[in-house]
Amino acid sequence: MLDAGPAKSNPKNMNLTDLADHYGSDKGSAKHRYTEFYHMLFHPYRQRKIAFLEMGLLIGGPEHGMDADRETGDLPSIRMWMDYFPKAQIHGLDVSDFSWFKHDRFTFHRCDMENPAEIAASMQEIDGALDIVLDDASHASHHQQNAFLEIFPRLTSGGLYVIEDLRWQPETYERAGITKTAALFRSFLDDRRFSHSDPAVAEAFNALIPDISGCILLPALYQKHRKDQIAVIHKR
Image (tube, rainbow, N blue to C red; front, side, top):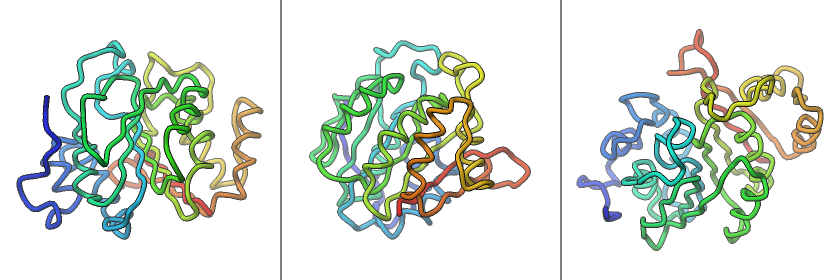
């Protein structure tokens, strides 16, 4: 079992990309480069006592054809967040089991995002509102949308909700004909209304509009000719 020790260098002197690269997270410079943006976005929260939730804790789950009960041997991004937010309560949610990771500032919630009731039950385990939520789970459109509808209302005022990897959906989960999450939020940016292939989902998202103060979509590697890759939604 791995311990929950910090980076060898003083984490206070490391930016988020440095921490991502240290722990081997694909959010860093080697692949997605999300941490370049996240360091700017999250830095004002760095020394605050926030509640942070990450969904999807290690690559290689059922979305890649592996069993949910796979062996899990590391938590790269959770280790990164623990160092980056030294005063935060960190929550991790995944369909696989990471309960072996023990730290007084970390709580694990096992949840299948196929089932909205399981998402709701997991949120009941969290005391108080969340300040930052990051969805890096299966990337299936309906999973992302199930999670947003359940969790966004639980954000504190001024909270941030981030959805990663909008341009890739797993064949193991993705439903035929469903509106992709990138297109869903693009419809909101274009028309100030959410459009969805399922009218009930559109209605549920449109009911949340009064609580959304802003939304941005960023392309892959921040290059404008590429597809939307990250959504950030700010709670009013």
